[in-house]
Length: 100
Image (cartoon, rainbow, N blue to C red; front, side, top):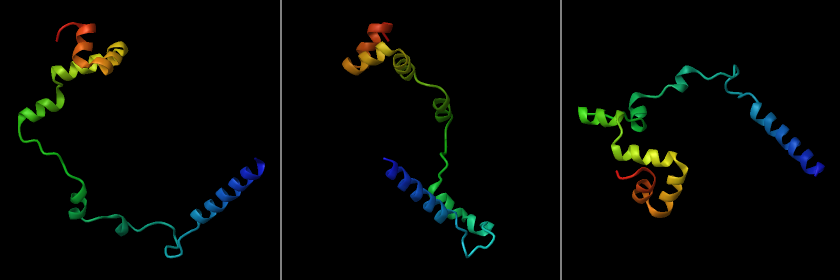
């Protein structure tokens, strides 16, 4: 066991030495700001802004539907959540909270 632990420590020490070695191309060790920046077209290729075209979409972003509120109520009550996995949401909700 000790030999495995010693071998692991030596391996980690060697890995740390290899990773911490400075890059010979950049003597200061810091990256230039030009190498960090990307063009706007490239950034827009993978970052898309969600566009909302109507007040209807804005409303449903902030307010939950009654069915979603009932699901959350059942999920927050462990016996209802367990029963909903067994027999379904509608029967479990009716059992613990009455009709919906």
